[in-house]
Picture 1 (cartoon, rainbow, N blue to C red):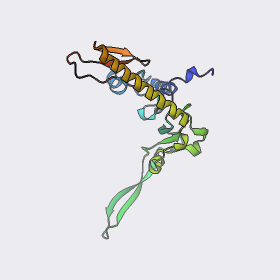
Picture 2 (picture 1 turned 90 degrees about the vertical axis):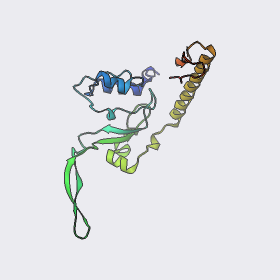
Picture 3 (picture 1 turned 135 degrees about the horizontal axis):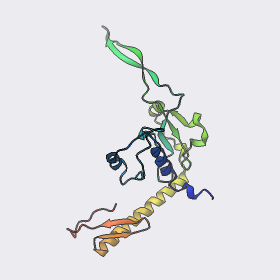
Picture 4 (picture 1 turned 180 degrees about the vertical axis):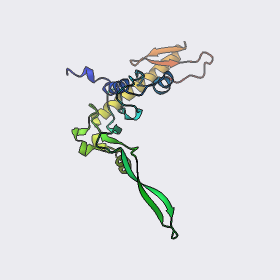
Length: 206
């Protein structure tokens, strides 16, 4: 129980940390375009020296607290080749047969996809051989990682979603009853809005 408080927003905190130490130098405009009004709103511009330089390598979160059980793009390691052999079409011969040659090209899929623990974000059972494959294999085999899905966590997430949805609806209805423009209510601090210029049309809650 000692570490339970630290588990709150665990996945989102990991995303924030990876961005903070990354080479992904966001400008003011990209900060607004990418993270304003999203769970990533606490992102900083990045230190610009070490770490990740591409957004796709940040962990996917189901909620602030829980990791997605399928992580589709995990940064490659030294065991993944920088280049790979690909077939390049040259021409068709007189019989219509396609002629190819093999060339080395930059490996643009130098990453893994993995099945992960929804609470810790670690590779499921800490077994990389069983629960991680290369990105190209992942796309070919259409991995889903169903074995990594925790139904208890799934139910918790669904209950939280329904609770927040109900709070938004109640706050919205209360805002309509008050008829005074803006009403703030609900445990999640949801806002309901009524446009001043119209008494019949209302904006959805945020």
